[in-house]
Length: 224
Image: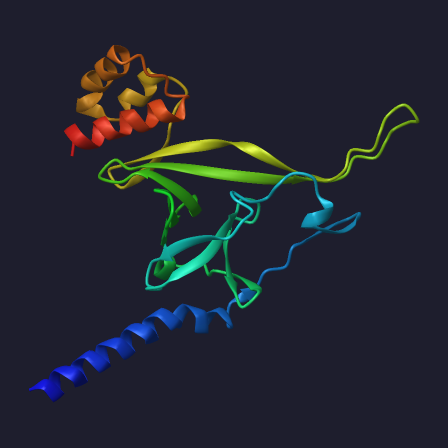
């Protein structure tokens, strides 16, 4: 009996190590990250460009769905990709439902991959549940602008952050959060009166992230 238990534990341990190593082995088949942008005026590395393409420039520990191991990652807002660090090399995590949910170890942030119509890419999930709240971040590249005369300076190429966009998932559809609270409440049909009352009584501003999170918490608590 003792031998059988030892054998089972050994098999379980081996399977665990195999699962943990799986994504690292696959990394060698992933596309290597190239920090270059090619334009009609030439090729630029990220170091040549003002601004920042990353949500966080450092690689942060995260749990990736189906990886079963803590992996160092960073999110590239310009390419909308997740980069993983392996043995000093940087690889791009494939955009697939296999690795669709990424939870950072040292923060409550959740990054999810969606592939539903126009909602293709990575989103931060603030509030889970039936009416989950999502946030889309985006960075765009602006090419160099030459000086037009001796009184002006050349504007170097740069990464420019775009205002975040928020979405509610309602009846399995992703709806962009409108600009005013009345239009937002109308999205929820029969619950619009209660939602309007909650917004007014708590003086919420739906263009403020923390107020929107508070509203999403209320909606998922009382209208599930």
